[in-house]
Length: 166
Ligand code: IDP
Image 1 (cartoon, rainbow, N blue to C red):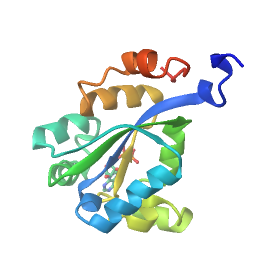
Image 2 (cartoon, rainbow, N blue to C red):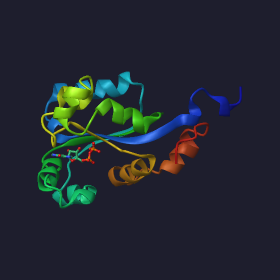
Image 3 (tube, rainbow, N blue to C red):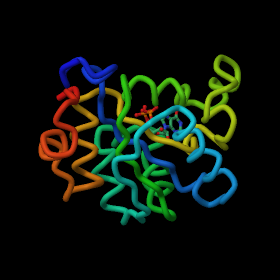
């Protein structure tokens, strides 16, 4: 078979996944979330631990400025270490969003009890994980967290047979 017919290759996609400070603060929860990434057969392209300054938090969540939870959110996201991942998988963007569950933890517990936020989230703000909501957001957010990562180069050099959703 030609390289282009490699099973599943055409649907391989990149996404940004982040384990937020509430979950990184608990080693067992961090480990459980990491295991979920592996068990769901994501390829970990890159990962790193980092701490945001308040201005990073404000910039990343600028679209929410003015919302009632904005101050709480930016303070929380700059309150301690996070772990960020560039993940690759078939339908990575929607698959990770499904796994995380709804934004609001109380709602997640009712409608999607098996999801990461339902299982490990503390509050609507401290909801354990972030995931890009579209391919376009994924590219922007990957660049925000991993400015040195060259998505196009990775696709061409490392995975020449994959057509990542770009
Ligand atoms: P998402 O993280 O599921 O994409 P967004 O609406 O983009 O959801 O919100 C970004 C983050 O802001 C959420 O993950 C959560 O931490 C926080 N947030 C969103 N809505 C609320 C709320 O109603 N109360 C408190 N925090 C919220």
